[in-house]
Image 1 (cartoon, rainbow, N blue to C red):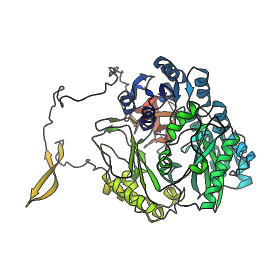
Image 2 (image 1 turned 45 degrees about the horizontal axis):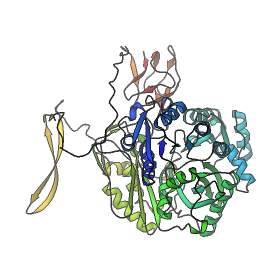
Image 3 (image 1 turned 180 degrees about the horizontal axis):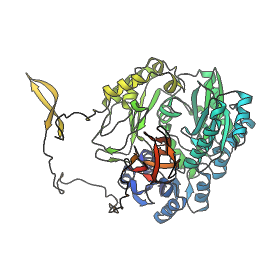
Image 4 (image 1 turned 180 degrees about the vertical axis):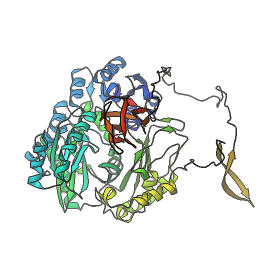
Length: 601
């Protein structure tokens, strides 16, 4: 086994990997950007190294910076987690060429399966059904149209290195082809450093079923059962469960064996996930994720097998210690992604803020994977997921009831999360019956139900509380007793003075983990934007494209630039018409909420 592992990731997945390392007696190394200097994974690791600015391309995606940190730390292995460089074959090859071990499939296997067209061709050779479409990348709108003419609209344009809905665009008619092709290519380049895309027939109402596999260097391949990831918004999963409520035993066995067969044909090692679409009793290979998955937790809960530990053991050359017949599925497990998003506002990312209250649930059958702690600042530079709540029970009905209890207990204040949405889904008849498909949230669910759930269970909106000018209104909670009975009451304080806490105050004693030193912020010269109509960023993110230039005339509703925030593209539009007087940002630049992007006159 390794002596020291660098985890080339952040947040809850970095902590998840580090916990597995600790149980194996392995020391851990964190890497962090400037934005993450106080993040939970940095606190948890045995040592940590700064690898660059907040922008992911300059830190977490910088191959040389990550490898250099590993060499400085004396790490003998690198675990990539998921996202960032986890499925980057070039990076894997560089690690393989170093003196460190890559914890994952070989760069060659990632090439074979990580690029979707190669994976589709390989699966066809292994007699695994695939969705009709191309087995080679497409480069022009005409090629997309030819596929659509053969199989009919809608078709899906997908990034070769894609995942999580990134780089996936659905085309419903010929007029959309050119724009959607360009967007898919741009997202593929931005998220996965790979602009290649392919096209396949789009199944409109399938189940999304995936199979967890483990394979060692001794020709052993095992599958750990399936997960159902059908509850999605904009092709991104929000609730996952194992086993799937939609599969019978025969289909379950067929899919599991197809996954084993395909992975074996690819000469694949370590952990991976084979994803399928299931519709009308038929299943089709979709893609292989050559890494650990966000939702690996539910598989661990129903099998009792620690997938991350086996990743480390396999990378160290150990043989899998169990046969396929030893894998037994017991009970039912659900994972709820706790994202910092406002579900009532089309799941828009929360703009950030301090975690004022963080009180997670507990009790029998409740697991929490997180990295945040109360008082932390929410880092919004990368993605919206702040924790994963995993609930396990003897069967699905008990799991639903336990999940309701756990989500009711979960208290987070300081920004919006999608906990109200999760609580709504646990009352939803179609979800409770296990009859939902991948289009349910986007196409069927009444959005006013989400709005009501957020009003009922979401954070209180303090805007408009005061009608007395700028007088400060503070709401405080008190506990009182009347005739021996306890009551919780809230009272408003108007004009209450702020309480100054001395810098040295705090509890005495106790052990603390040191954090990286806080760097002094450089003072930036303000940009003059006098007069005119200012178009500002509504959230922190990265500029993917600038669609106007000085002197251009724009009308109300025109897109002036595209802002990527938390893995979603957001069009920034002009609310009024005018002439562009200033363009203050460029492609690839990071911006904060409220920054002026464009000025109209």
